[in-house]
Picture 1 (cartoon, rainbow, N blue to C red):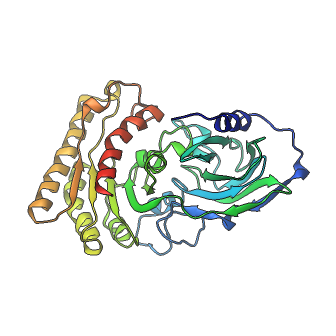
Picture 2: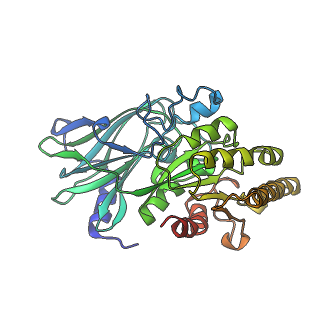
Picture 3: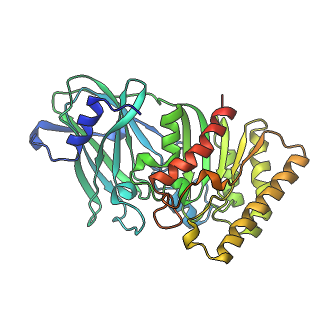
Amino acid sequence: MKKTLLACTAFLFAITCGCISAQDITYHNAKKFTLIGKAFETGGHYHRVDTAKYSAMRLTVKRIFTNTAGLAVVFKTNSSVIHARWKNKHVFSANNMTPIGHSGLDLYVKDGKEWVLAGIGRPSIKGTESSWKLAGPLPVGEREYLLYLPLYNELTDLEIGIDKDAVIESLPNPFRKKIVVYGSSITQGASASRPGMAYTSRISRNTGLYLINLGLSGNGKMEPEVADMLSEIEGVDAFVLDCIANPTPEEISQRTAYMVKKIRSTYPDAPIIFVQRMPDSPSVLTPEDRKTVDRKNRNLEAEFDKLRAEGIKNLHMIRYDSSKFPDNEGTTDGIHPNDVGFSYLIDIIQPKLKKLVR
């Protein structure tokens, strides 16, 4: 990807402290601007799903859906600097993620046809309130921005700070179509270094497709209540079910058909794409772990074949392919991908998605 002077300058200044005084910055409530990445309109502005409406879902599932994984604020401004003040519900706590990925912000700027990194927001690791200069000083001119929100925290308040004489305006969603991605912690974004590095967000920037991140860390178990919710999301062009890591082999056999048929009851023609369980680092897998992963993939394959034999069409499978993972350097903790590992995963998922969603 090309690196322009604008992008490099923005990034370098974003990670240093600026000299502009606080009284020269005006803060704007981010609720005034377009928020993308939500499955529905919700009571909690920064929640991915209306957890009050779907009361039958398990409490843990509802709690994780309040995390802001995949959500981003879209705006344009002619400001020479961009600041942010935000408040998370929980203090940062994770042993396999960076504070920025877990609880921070990630700013991208439109450079020609590409979205490039402009700066980051480092969260407090001792409290819930944070303030950071994301980018600047920037060259004169109006630019478009995407501000990604924390992957693993619940955001309760966000303000964007600009020069007091600058203008800031909302922008429409820059992505097209609508692809719902339901899955596990890997879908949610563990262990990406920054919020914008979750694979759903990277595929959106790469392709222009609009991916909705419905990752549920440790809890993407194909439960009927979640299947019911997926079937009620409006305007979906495709579903990606990357959820095989969390259910047991037996749960996969018991729940796959219900989830597919429930989606098909609303969307008779939209592509449904299963992603088999991708490998952990071989160095941390016991022989028993390897057998469990293999059983999950075999059970999914069996259910997939049954559904196709019943006549369910436009059902697809992205199968585990060890050749797509050339080394053991793609993981943070032996289980969750780092940015390199997400690149391997994107190389598998993105071509299939582009082919099916024209």
